[in-house]
Image (cartoon, rainbow, N blue to C red; front, side, top):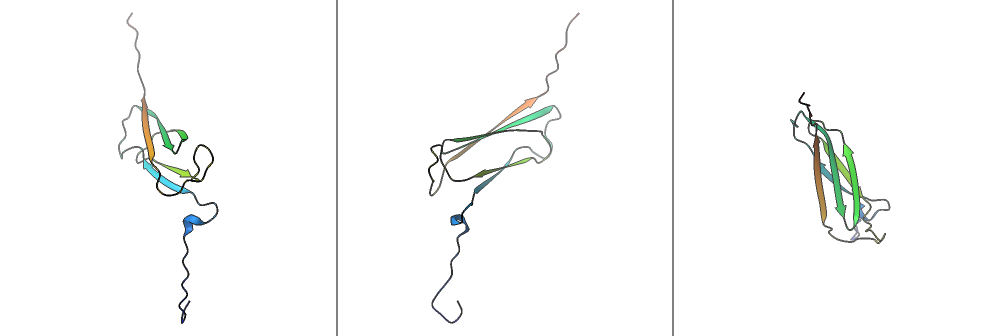
Length: 97
């Protein structure tokens, strides 16, 4: 506050409802033409998230985490996140007659 020794410090990560955000780039600018689906899995502090996405160029996935672990306990500090991507391509089967 001007003219005083008092300072206001605001930290949004302590606000109620704050969620940590992780933005993952899932596909490149030119994904394979036979790509039919992308399965994104995110694991953080025992919490799992699975999402099946329709492929498109420069596809991103945003994971929001409420900073609770698998036991519904608040997690403070840094957390390890593991993310995996599985791509599913079209398979052409032909029969020999």
